[in-house]
Image (cartoon, rainbow, N blue to C red):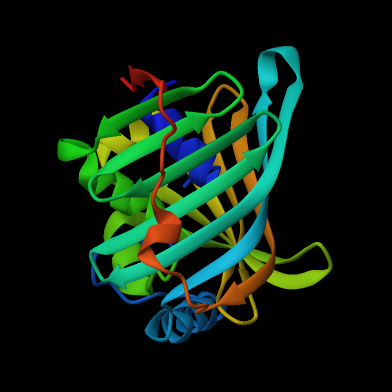
Length: 231
């Protein structure tokens, strides 16, 4: 698995205007309203727990790989967001925090990890796309257009479309879509990776600002685990 693959596990794996540039005003009043909801939710965001359903679609063979589980997110500060995901089929734990990403597969007792290092900025951009992001940060990293009204699992939402401005991100992600609830929360993400392939992550049962201990986000590995390295 690549380190970018780890992000897909997170947001689909871990991320908002008529192609507005950094600091440019949004031209669409309906889009302004969506971004205002994002900003309001971001101001009070400290973390969340939710159920997650992740579907990876491979277009050439028309196959959908579906997994589900739970996610915990804790924003320690504006530059430190930590995430833990427990997936069930196949069973695996994914964490991002303390400068590294880790994946543990208990069935085979294998663990992969990568020091984020120079990729820290890219990781931050993906985290932006779902967890406590504000409109200024999103507009700095993406050109944004309004997709329109929609619903996710019966919950009203507005879809927005994002095009990455960073050429390095664009190598991996061609386009992103976010579904923003009336409460300003991202309840679904879709990452288009090229050639008709995409990763779709849907969140439900969301609980905002729960009391999450730092230890609950750490990955405690058993003895005898076999280590690999994400590339």
